[in-house]
Amino acid sequence: MHRLEVGQPYPVHLPESVQYNYRGGQHELLMVMGRLTEEEVAAVRSGPCDFGLLVSGPVIFFLYRFGDEIPWSDAPYSLWLVPASERVEPPTEWRPDTRALLTVILVEQESAIVRVLRAVTFSPEFTMAIHGQIWAQATMRWRGRERYDRTISEAYGKWPHTSDMIRDAQAITKGGE
Image (cartoon, rainbow, N blue to C red; front, side, top):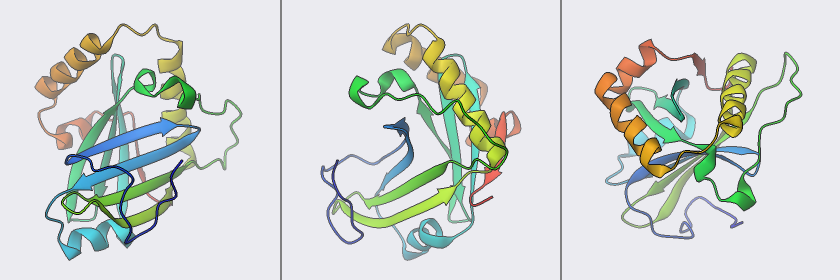
């Protein structure tokens, strides 16, 4: 595992994309964005943030926004796409005060420089919901990348905008709740 620092290069140069992952027992939102404004950086660094969860077949859509600067967007996820060495199911023990921690990494695409590292918690209810959905995925038989990609396409046909997904989300939380 690489040690990340704000102002230092990300270990690999990535195309513009956003990826949510639960791997190695950790939640991570990696945002590689081009032409970042200082307002966007500030919103991700310390602005209000909201997260949502929508499940469609074998795909978990992790929904997110950071203030008004980064509107609702989504990142599809499957535990089965995580390398086997990092594929860990969430803890089954749950207490009413359990809050999962999300690490948010904002990388400037052009320079590959890490601009933001932020840790934010989910509410206990959201923690239970997302962990439950990851567990459900772990018990499903993996039917391949083709079905995963087809499910994503179908979901975007049903919910053309992330704001449409929010209306049908199984769980929503404010960061830090």
